[in-house]
Image 1 (cartoon, rainbow over the protein chains, first blue to last red):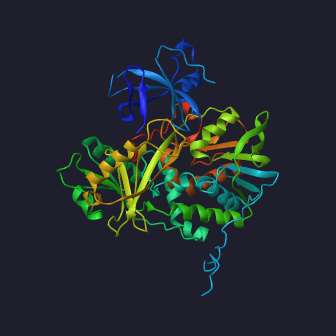
Image 2 (image 1 turned 180 degrees about the vertical axis):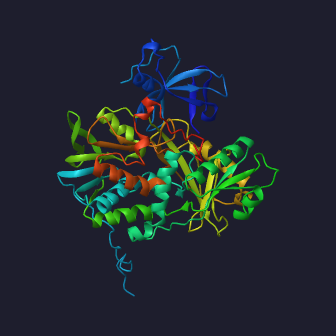
Length: 92
Length: 410
């Protein structure tokens, strides 16, 4: 089983975590002005890259806090974990 | 005694079922993805519409992705009219597919039980049975003692964590041999003159305004009149090249087989609540699948704890399996859409058709989507069976929300 490094608790087993999908998808600044198409993209459309992906994880059976991670979706390797209030790391 | 040449006693290589072709420079139709859906589409383009200047491009070998990695369950007992129409269309084609392909596919209509474990499950299941009947799909509601008659190895005692409160039963549902299905389609498409090009990965597209004019591949650029994307879990890789956003997420979906056993399991049993589905293949392996791994992944493998949970569910439901040994596990990559229904039809490019989002249940649709997509390509107009499954529905809100509503195990 893969270990995931929670930024607060350190490395823990994968079963303690739950997945939150793509990170850095902000709520629209002016929701009332959004078209149906823009709403559809906010609600339903997420990136689905093969390779590096910035995503949200929750340490649901541990500290129950959310964090972000850069993970490779082809190898499943975690490259970086960082706090929600940290900016998205610039990766090479 | 003189030494014999190694290999001299081996039988000759069997006849190849299809030519391994070098791609031509141009085709009327280029299908990206040589899995079940791509091969079926090619077959029906030739058979129903006489379109044979067609190439199927496959980055690996034919039917080596999800077509080689599924649990082969075929059924049409979906809740909504739109879904039951396309899956029932597929099931009817399955019923005549051996004759159509002239190839054995071991299609066995042994029935599917979808177990209910809670009062809400029971209500949803009965509702689905009634909806199925209205749509002309065979369906029955079975009480626990009737479940026991159909499948004696299911634990229907009340003394388990999630007792079986009943099940829906579709007698015409069943299984087929996935490899044979793909080979049957490939053989007929090849006979019709369609080029099946293996080891040919798409690396980009050449576009001219609203049209795609060519497909760039590892074996050169191929000009295309129409392009159909049948790449399942890798759809986003292709649509990213085209700059089209598609609301699918690729997840690993794992399955496994046991060692070969005597025939013990006469039907197919699915359970959403405890999350396992089981049938017994013709050779004797128990074939079991579960839900997707939670995270996005293209790795064709998943986490072990998912398998462990699936086995716990299987042993609870089928105590007789407790001593069976695991033979092999594998993972495919499935493209899951927000409403658990496929996305088929037009794209922002005039001559590119999309076929994706089948999630965990694309195998059962193989002949149905093949014929409907071929019709769509031939007439440049979505076939009525695929018309509800447009990419537009996420903007209009006309979703076909099969998540949990039907017997969909996700």
